[in-house]
Every structure is written in C-alpha cells, then in structure tokens.
Amino acid sequence: MRGSLGVGIVLWLGSSGVGLAWSSHDLALRIAEHGPRVPGGEAHEIARDRLLASLIDIGLSDVVAVPIGGTELVNVEAVLPGRGDREIVLAAHYDTVAGSPGVVDNASGCGVVLAAAQRLAEMPLEYSVRFVFFDGEELGALGSRAWLDALGPEGQDRILAAIHLDMVGIRDSAQPIVLTYPSGEPSRQRWTPAWLVHAVARAGESVGFPMQVADSRWSLLMQLISRTVRLVYDSDSSAFLAVHVPAVLLSDFSILHPFPDYHSDLDSPSHLDEERMRRWTEVVVAGVRRLDRLDGRPRWDDEFLEAGRVWIRRDLLWVGFVLWVCLVIRDRPGPWKGLDNRARSQRGRAYLPGFLFRGLFLLVALWIPAVGAILVYPLAGAALWKPKSDLWRWVALVLALTPALAWSVVLVSLQLRGVLVGWNLSAPRTLLLVVCCATFVLLQSRCYNSDLRRGDLSGSGASR
Image (tube, rainbow, N blue to C red):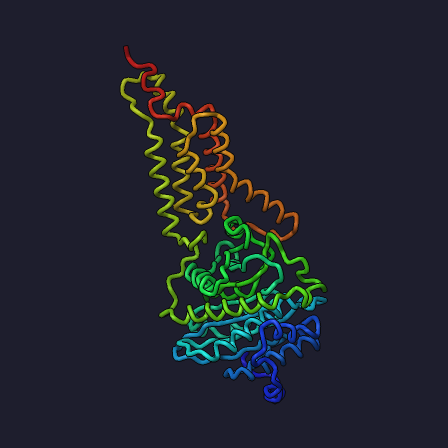
C-alpha cells in the first residue's frame, strides 16, 4: 500500500538542515551513527527520519515513508520531476542485519544516493528520477518486492531503469564493480541487460572512475561463475529484474575478495573512504544523465560479456562462427581418392575427433555463447594452432583448459565458503560443455594429433 508515515514529524525535520550540501561520506555516517538499523528498532526509526529530512531539504517532491502492511518495514522515497512520463530509479537499502552498524552495508549506498540527489536537483532532466531507500533487503528484498507489487505492471513499465547502490566507498578496494545478480530460478532468470551495463560502464569512464563487471580483478572468471552457478548473495536489483524492469547493482563488494567485516559488528566508519565516496557520487550522476538521454528502453539482451567492451549475443555468435569456419578449413581431411579401405578407415578414425569437436563447438557457440566464449573459444584457438612437438602440444592443451581449471577451483572455493547454493546451467548445457572439453582433449592427444594433418595418409595404402 502507498501512504505517508509521520507527516508532521517529517515537516518538522525538513527544517533541520540535515542533508543539504553534505558530502556522501558525512551523510552515510549520520545514517549509521546510532548503530544497527534492524526494522522496528530505534536506530532504524532515526535513520528513516533522517532520510526523510534530507530529501525534503534537497527540495524533492512527494517525499513519503511507505509502510509495508503487516510488517515493521518502511520504504522511503521522493521524486525529482522531469519533463517526460518515464522514471529513472536510484535506490539503496537502509536496513542492516542485527549486530552490525552497517556503515558500509549500506549507509554508504544511502549517502551516495542522497549526494547524487543534491547534484541532480540542480540539473534539467527529461525523465523524473525517483529516489528510493528500501527496507528489508537483508530479509530477502522484502521492501523492494512490496514496492514493485504496489506499482503494478503499468507503474513498473514507466521505469526506464533502476540503479542500485550497495556497499560502496570501501577503503583500499580495487576498481568499482558492476554486479549483475540474476533473478529467479534458472528456468525464469533475467539478467541486467547489456545496454544498461554499457551505460553505467561508460559513465564511469567519463568521470575517470572505470568499472569492472562482476569482479575488480578477475572480471571474466567471475562473469563465468555468475552465469553458471547461483550464489547466496542477492539484492534489491534482482527483485526489479524478476518483473522485467532493467536494473543494475553498483558496488565495491567483490565475491572473490569479500569485504572482511561484512555483516559484522566491525562494519565501522574506518572502512569508508571519503574521496572514493565522492567518486561514486560522480559516477551515479553521470549514469543518470546518460540514461536521461535515451529515447526509451533499448532491446533487452542479457546474453553478453564485458571484456574491454560489452559483447552482446550477436557479437559472440559472430566470433564463434568465424572460429568454427577456421576450424573447418584448417582440418580438412585431404584427398580420399586412391586410398584403399584400410587407409580410408585410418583417416576416418583420425578425422573423427576433430569432426565431433567442431560440431560440439558450434552447438556451444549457438546455445550458450556467453559461457562458451570463456570456456570453449580458447579450445578452438588451441585446435587451430596444432603445434608439431609434444611439448608445445601439451602447453597448448593446458593454456586452452586454464579457464575451465580456474572455474573449477573457484567453484570448490565458493562451495567451501558456503556461498554456492545452486546451478544456473541446465543439465543438457552442462553435459554439452563437458563433452566438448573431453573431445578437445581427445583431439589434442598424441595418438590422434599426427594423423589430423592434411596429407598424412595421402600415400598410405594407395593402389598399385
């Protein structure tokens, strides 16, 4: 249900000076200074009122606290009106787990959203910007799910895109990260669309704060992990994706190198970097302005990889097709004319692994291009190389299988940490990848390699 909470208190707080012209760092500390913000607690109520007061001081419209019926959860929101009928949502959650002051998780995100609101309020915008501070994210994104349900399909369709901030400004963290947690079960999953990832990534570049997708150090590996397995981590952005609203999560949190005091009583102000918080504010403002220039939602393409640029499904398919054509040309079996039955049989057996690998490779490229581009495309490169010596043959084999080996090691590590909760790839797709890799190993093995070169058997067994 939509409604306001404590309107008289909010109007009084509106003259308190909280929020206006404060830095994102200082705003975050004010939200977190009373300790854990567990729904129903005093610190939670104080943080909510400070958010409301800040939004009023900035001069935004429709500043309201929206209780979620039957719970102690309260979302806070406000609007910066634009000329168009669509909205851009800029969001962060303000609740915490019990026992954690939640400075990084997620007073930091709230501070950046408020600071961005101050900046954006001074700029003319085509679309309205709705600033939402969700409650109950730590309980399973309850606040964002209830908020979206209250909007209904028509209200959801008005949202051009949503940018969520969670755990930003962490001191000594590496590059900022674009996280793309999927929504729902594997059969119904939606991912952040490529155009939205491209927009926020280019926004980061425009202000000299470049971002990586999935992980700050091992981007491709983590993109592979997130495409193939389900992790315990979730966010409000997933709730938006579940109802087909484009959404992206921006963070300093690395799954491979996690924040050491995540969900602990040591999540304190010492972890926040004021300069990094300022840079995050610049990125968010630039991202909203870039989205504001769009005519509408571009086509939703969530089968992509980011590697220097965003490679959408069409790009990945073309790369796979070119590799497949090169494999076909490279591994032509040579002339069969003049060979006796024994020689034909030998050549057929020698040609079979390559034939199977090319067929399986093409299926992977067509069916799961984002995963295949990391796991299987390197195999095609090694198959095209075909070194003559045994040493280099095994070097090529190891290099080509390195992504698969690294993927396996990280999966084991995540399982031991207890953050791996399921599998995203269907059983047929998983089997296809395994068989494709096994066929490549067979192709590269010594017993077949020498016979795969064209003309190896051209004179063998010829009719006399």
